[in-house]
Length: 180
Image 1 (tube, rainbow, N blue to C red):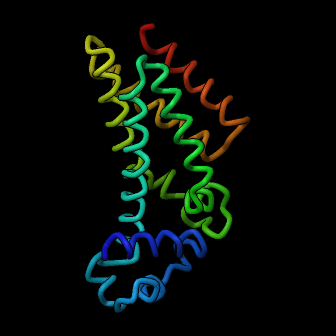
Image 2 (image 1 turned 90 degrees about the vertical axis):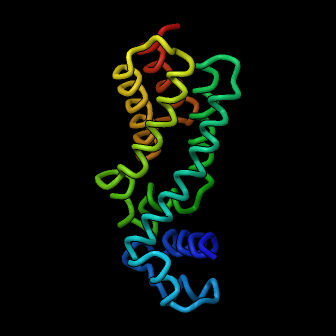
């Protein structure tokens, strides 16, 4: 039931944003009472945070898989960044957040209130960087990982070219910060 509620909430958020999200609408889509939604998530903000955590986890599974599967580290980064940008372009909720269409009030969940996205993403990237470059100092790995994640979020929020150009730019930064 929780997964169904999160899916329904994501659809409602994409269509109506945070201010237009109604717990009764989410409950109605799943066929449960509004109180059931409140019991599961506590508040509307709790529901939105749960959607953000679920969506972030889904993306990070795909990102991590591509980082692990590639024979060379920078190939893995290219595959992971390409996956991220392509998946986000197909994701109605992410598109609504990024473009402001129907969900402009959700933008803070990727910017000023974006730590639930930034921190786990940084952990995934740092773990893979450590696996590939075990001799690098931990602080350097964390800085590079966070920089790559912030760049990826920036390219999602404000693209300045094609996805391929964005991936190339992010890889250039990673290559400058990491051993070949």
